[in-house]
Amino acid sequence: MNKTLIATASVAALLAMGGSALAGDLYAKGGYKDAPVVVAEPTWTGFHLGLGVGGAAVNHEIDAGLYDVRSGESKSIAGIDGISGTGVFGTVEVGYDRQYGNFVGGIFFNYDFGDDISTDVSLLGHDLASVKQTDSWTVGGRLGYLVNASTLAYVLGGYTESTFELSVPVANFSTDDTFSGWTVGGGLETKLTSSLSLKGEYRYTEFDTNTYKTGPLFCHIGAYADIDTSVQTARLVLSYKADLFGGELPVPLK
Image (cartoon, rainbow, N blue to C red; front, side, top):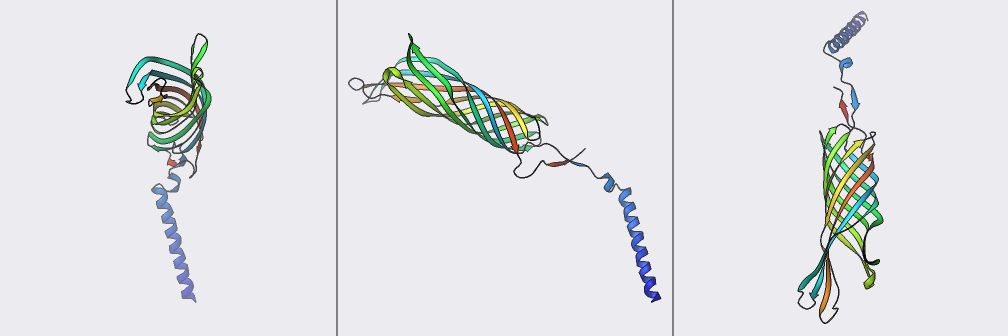
């Protein structure tokens, strides 16, 4: 019995000495009290939803003439350069950004809506034609650089489709058509909170040429019109960052 008690006491003493030595070693080498404090630093990585408003300026260049229905040969008669119209629109946007150091890359899709952007042609008080842009959507990407932790300067590019309604009252003609083209632009976005940001953005869109032809007006001769359209927009968008896969990324505080 005495031997057992002595052995037990010896083991307990050794364990106590080892624990004290370990604690002293951790303290001396910078243990728990010197561990870096971990905080959450705002990140641009994540999905975002946006809602905004903007203004647009539409420009149409029209080339009109006659063509031979049988051979397809055409002859330009008149050209109109710079028929333009302005208006306002609303926009909704969804996208995803990924931060790489001071750079941010992302993809987006947005839809612009409104029927206030109209281009009208009149002569001596009579309406000759009207072209109205009703809606538009763009899919594309952006690449930006962080001016500071909460401000992003970026450029963008994408593909755009838009619906235009064409009306020619004097000919009792109306139609709507889809124009497609490319978009480039840039902007500045700043974080208001960890979840909300506000951006101002400029875009330029160049659409492909759309051609409209009539049937024979006399004999085998018909009329045609080529329309080249470009649109410039400026928009202000409030975005909400949705952390679908977790919160902010923790980084050591230096």
